[in-house]
Length: 164
Image (cartoon, rainbow, N blue to C red; front, side, top):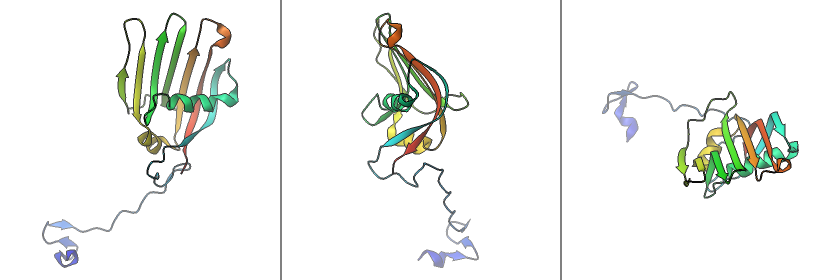
């Protein structure tokens, strides 16, 4: 029995001091205490729109969520850069709210000689667990054609809100 080996606060076998378990830290607002297994759902809450061009404000949160989920297969996209032809460009970047880069993720490069297709991805469950409730910055520029009326961009501060 473990309690028999502790004498005067010392673990007799290992020579270590026994201590009480550390209490759990209270979770941040919007962060569940623990994500249920298989729960990969989240919402995006806009904190501040710093800049927008040719896009309605109510569409920005939806575009951010779509871009985060764009890699698929249970991954979160932190960076995406794609070109196809001379005018078709998509640039997406998530950073900390202060403008510093996120240290997480791994790079995927599916580029060819003519087209760029680069990703920085991380596990979606890890992304939700690590960044839920924190303010992040997102930049998106989309040019589906050379037609200026179809292009749009924005830079915003947002928060990931985990459902759970």
